[in-house]
Amino acid sequence: MGRKGKTARLKRKPAPKYWPIHRKESLWVIKPAAGPHSLQRCLPLTLVLRDVLGVAGTRREGKLILSEGKVQVNGIVRKKDDFPVGLMDVISMPTANQYYRVVPSHKGLILSAISKEEAKYRLVRVEDKSTTKVGVQVALHDGTNMLIRIADPKNPVEVTYETFDILKINIADGQVVGKLKTKENNTAVITGGKNIGVQGKIVEIEKTEAKKRRQALVVIENDKGVRCQTILDFIFSIDNNEPEPVIVTEEPEENTVV
Image (cartoon, rainbow, N blue to C red):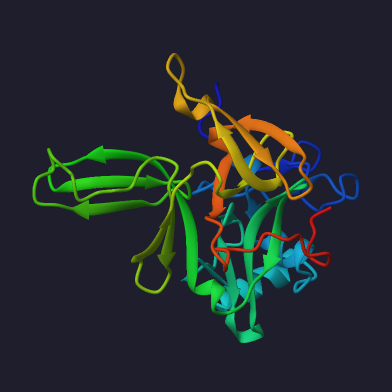
């Protein structure tokens, strides 16, 4: 009889390479539940508590911490130990006064320590837009959707969000408090491919005509003048060269995933 449904198990060897786990000390590792991020681009909460932050010694201790409601992801208390956290998610532990944002690095995904004030908002990228009977639905990179009600859905002039725009959303009330365009001269970080984690100024964005815009080539130049090339789908804008950056993506030594 054929298999029905997905398997709930994951062996350590095929697990994502950036997960901070020993590959040969045991056979199995926790598998992330279905959620806003794919298996290859997420970290399960128990692995974050036990192997990245070290606040739990075992999976059982991690479950106990989560069951007490001490961990929030994007302002929502999460109690499932296999809940997946991914790019730009905000992990908060208010009782311990610890706040982190998941950012890309050359090793994969890491946790960057942030202040309590910075933990009050999250950054999301617009992936798609669609028109409904009551307004425009905006799909975001973290699996959430935002419905904007407008007077005339057939002529949505009020909606100024475009694909690949970065929205700054207040976690408390879900309101958009800022917008950042993905354009030349803005600062961006690469979120995928062999150049993942590279941060620099967008020098050039290819003009696409005969292929999808997501596959458009983008040239990034870092602060040392070194240039690299990737596709637009791997670009996440983080600053428009104002005096105060939107976020800081420096790689913390103690929280680096190895």
